[in-house]
Length: 404
Figure 1: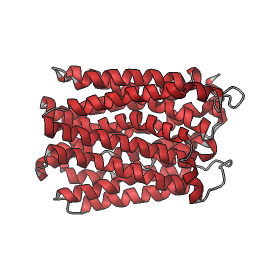
Figure 2: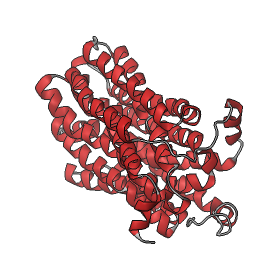
Figure 3: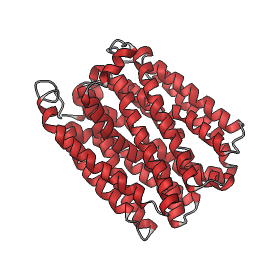
Figure 4: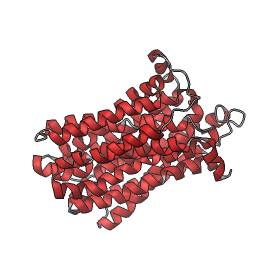
């Protein structure tokens, strides 16, 4: 398969507009994580409160992905994305100009930031509908590399908060979000072959298919691990090793960049090696590195290395999952993106909140990391249990040109 065939197969301006929209939306979605140390110092939050604060946008984004998935199929991706971006910009304006002096205010903000996380349910169908089955992994890997926006939040937010105050960071984010909205409006285009919209009852029919639940579980581990760590690592490096908020942000950014940049690689590997084989290997590696991290490294450099390796495995796994989903549910890609994305957000909420509670109750993060490592192993076992059935039914050579 030549690289040029991919670039001729779809609509490149839409692909990169989807990536840019996704990228900056995710930057905003996890913003409370890199700012958590400074916010906590000002508001006097406990470890559990910090964990819940940074986890709230993940859960809100998860639930709102269902809403956006429905809007994508009924209004088409471009219009749904426009509505979502306007909501995010309004939320940032409120956060910038409002009075965020209480823990409850931060939870409300976290819920509203969920609209940014729901961008996932728009960007992926927007890109997916332009590409044939054999290029789904690559296309969705590129669009999904918008995960890298979480690294920009970790890289710049703590420094900007130090210079201008953490509340001013929300106002500064309005600038790149405005640029992203303009790029999206000008360059994004709906695919001409979009499936007709379904009734709300028909969306529920998808949940009767056990494969839908498998995909939701698989993504709750890969993306849940990625987003949960992206939101929590600044707190972890600050609390575990005493790093300053800025340095903790730099370390978090390194981990998140690793997980983000390999998402296209995960899609490409899945296109060439098969999604099941790629994802199986990634679960094995993710479980191993998360378990090592749970033991507690003596130095922050060692912890950084282990978390980078874990994020590499999780990010590659994210790309592999979304090589498989469009093969199985191509006609329902809008609602399945919403459902699978929701599960990923729920996984992230669980990991981020459990790390905070683990720290408060036991004095360390070990329990939270150990349980999530076990979930990666459980996902591997589940994937191996459906492998034969998938490869002999919808994933057979008679049904698709893609490698499953």
